[in-house]
Image (tube, rainbow, N blue to C red; front, side, top):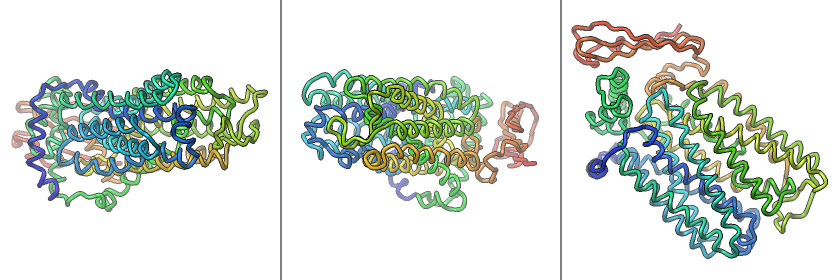
Length: 559
């Protein structure tokens, strides 16, 4: 807390500077701007995957072997790991907006270094620096969106981050595909320089964003907090019942947070928070262990195993990027309609099936080879005489991408931004869980080329087994967060409600004042069928939410 108090003056100056500019209060536009950081993540993935198999890239960087190429590819994830851990030291004391500005700065600098790279070392340094920016953005943007969005559309808004990731992958892959026809180093230099545009777009857009209402409340700017919530949720109507309920819950949570001890990373593992911490960390780890980034980073290698080379390989690879983007769109709606848990469990099962299918086809029909196109990372290949098996591998890869994009791709970034509940730990918790995502991203990027070289098709069996494990983990330990305010989610953890707790009868009463009447909003959950009732009653002795007994403000009954 001392660290944050020392930065109060700086935080106020930064806030006042941003407040000079006009603001946008449409939640979809606001979150579309903040999730440009997701596009950066996607752009980086395809900017390297599109070139690792080209002659221009391999000649200029002296034909990097599997270990070196693994480190080049995963160096961005290593930078993102450190960027994620550092985020809370900026975002908590200084605000979400300045964090996004810092994100764009690191991205632009890193992209410039990559574009001018003269050797492997400079390329790695550039990717590390860009990765720091991506780590900050991937931590702040989902949290910022969850803090702004009304609960009824939080799934859609939270999913915008992953949609922007997929859109960035798609845009950059086709840019890189067009540029790979250019002979010489200009092909990848132009592509990597093109990345700067996304950093500049985020930098300029941040000036038109409102600050997070929960950050404003935590730092004592209550009038502005109420103003932002009302403009986002009710077009400026501060007397709207949902606005009053939201403000009351934020205030209650802030009062609890003020009495709590100083929040550190160690706090996340104390008795109160450890279960949600482990859940969020494993959610991010499981997303990496689905094997999706194997498809994203090394799809060129996979299609070489299936017998596709040259331009045909790149065209076939591009189809999965289109599918990844398009199938993300229905997920934006599914998560708010069906819920987080069912979507994640179905996705895990489908991905397991398709991974085992890829392994089975490659294991049955491929033949050992010493290398493909001079690259000894690829040690198996389906012969040209068996085109049906090759098409089967491609089809299973496409179906795997579709199942990931419509479930775990969107679901985990959303889930990990809201599962913390408590305002006090949300940003630090998101930093830690996102860092777990990035360190496993780094490990997978390092491990995959060697895995392809040494155990070939069995690589897919490993990821399929992970998918089976994550299905059971979600079933037994991931509570549903759909339709709940962030403060409600904190109650789930505090009351130790089991992950399948929707089968219990739960009632919660919210009260807010309108003129001389208290509006009491009661939400019942029974057998996953929500019922909301609004009733009006009078509490003449109470002039504010604080004057009411806690039992009236928040009532939780379990049967």
